[in-house]
Image (cartoon, rainbow, N blue to C red; front, side):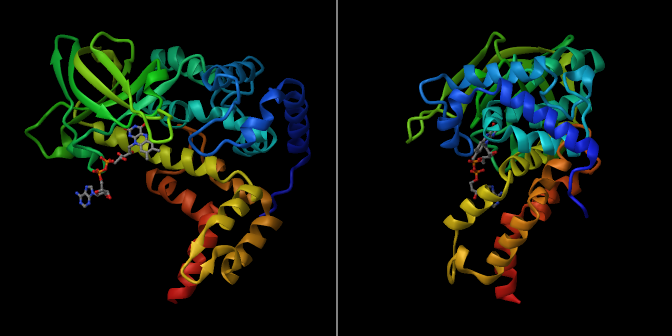
Length: 344
Ligand SMILES: Cc1cc2nc3c(=O)[nH]c(=O)nc-3n(C[C@H](O)[C@H](O)[C@H](O)COP(=O)(O)OP(=O)(O)OC[C@H]3O[C@@H](n4cnc5c(N)ncnc54)[C@H](O)[C@@H]3O)c2cc1C
């Protein structure tokens, strides 16, 4: 496979690079370089405000969520152009962390299950960062066992009444909307009694309480739902089909997280330098070193997961999406190859 830019891709790269050089928030470069996964460092500046500002600047110029269709706020770009954009955006892409759940998980779910009117209303503002979304799945009694969730939705005319509790909801305190999975039938097998909705986080009866972490951050929240009313028009998928809808979200989550980690050789090298295997540092392991060398001489391949990460328009089915980050993340490959070799 030849990963070199074609003439058209070279032109695209130059256009993107010139725009980024002229518009990126260079005053954030130093703190952003200290950002880790799940924490965006912006020094003395407010991380949410800065993330929103950069996202809106990109959206106004047609550089937000570039693989999405134009009518939903994207650019209609190709998967390769999306990879090129991410390479060029580089460190400023870390500001997108605020939007990863909305753009990487909620948006593909909306694209697959919402009506056209809702897509046109919500997706462009998701792309531009004007509205932040969260994913309300986990519960105190239904974390790993998602299908065991207990938050109830009961139909009342053309609305649903929600009662229950969610937990570990990333970014809920900053969110305008969320996708919410509920139990609508307790008398059938647990995977069959679920229904998905999207809701306005400012609805009456929604109480979001940030969880204080040991490091002082509050990345997660508890969410309490007390007779919250959601119009039936905001149901995603059929009644009882929530498990299927949730799988769309979760498979895209794997891709969004996997794709966001493997950004280039420096990141992979840094990760490997921290890994310790049974026989010592991973960076001393022959198989790891060999795979690392491959990553170095084929840098564009490190972005392969992103080739498949066009939310809602992925050519892969759920099972393939689930495997993509494992197949294409060289850091994982390096690590796994070392272990496979050892057990062979
Ligand atoms: C960085 C991060 C961000 C997150 N963001 C969100 C978010 O935005 N929205 C959201 O909804 N959730 C979020 N979560 C929650 C996450 O997706 C999981 O649902 C949650 O962490 C698992 O639930 P739990 O912590 O209650 O663990 P539990 O479900 O209690 O599991 C604890 C342990 O028990 C094991 N276990 C559980 N059930 C069984 C079983 N039946 N048989 C055998 N073993 C079992 C598990 O494998 C695990 O080792 C986030 C988590 C993390 C780490």
